[in-house]
Image (cartoon, rainbow, N blue to C red):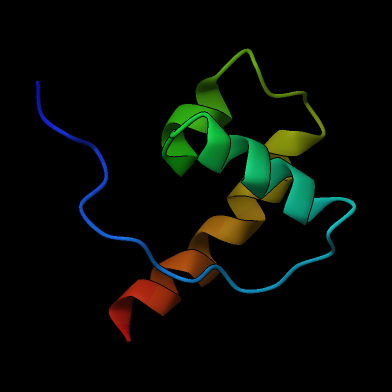
Length: 63
């Protein structure tokens, strides 16, 4: 089985009460953004937060 995570990167700071909680849950479950968005473990209010966070995260990786 191939490992998912090859490196760690800093995630831009977001509101800890909303975005922060959602991103933290995603990281604890070791999911990608795509996996979390399609997961039944995340609520309907979490999925737009993940979609909004994903482009910013990609910018961090490109630097």
